[in-house]
Length: 137
Image (cartoon, rainbow, N blue to C red; front, side):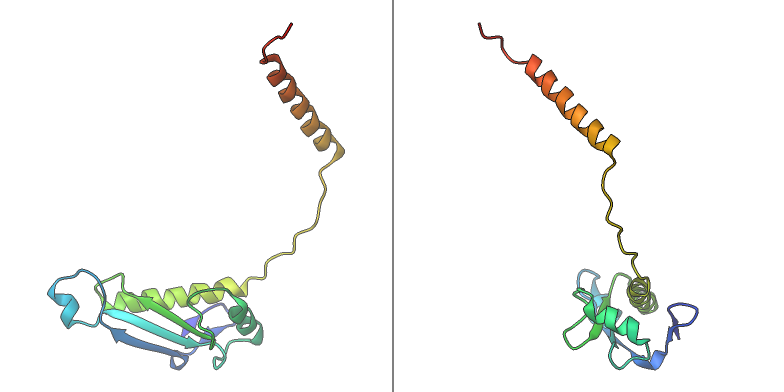
């Protein structure tokens, strides 16, 4: 069970994890051991609430395919268990990020005092630059 919040969790059967060979340097170990983890999670077929699914599908994230499948590859560590934990952690943070509803911004205007202060500083700056000019006769 992957716990997202107090009320939402994902069953292990919904997450497809496979071990693959890792890329990059690592000596002979890289050619023998499948330590990298390839995680696949189908958003549409999952037991997540509909609001989570909609927000996940509208996210512009390169890890989410057009079919609605999250694909995460973890290969930072030499240990398969650590890579599995890292991949599950990334999936968890991605879904938790979607669970938070951003607050709508209230449109505000600068106060009269702030506008006056801004204009006064612009006038002062202009006068300073004017004093630096050459005097023409």
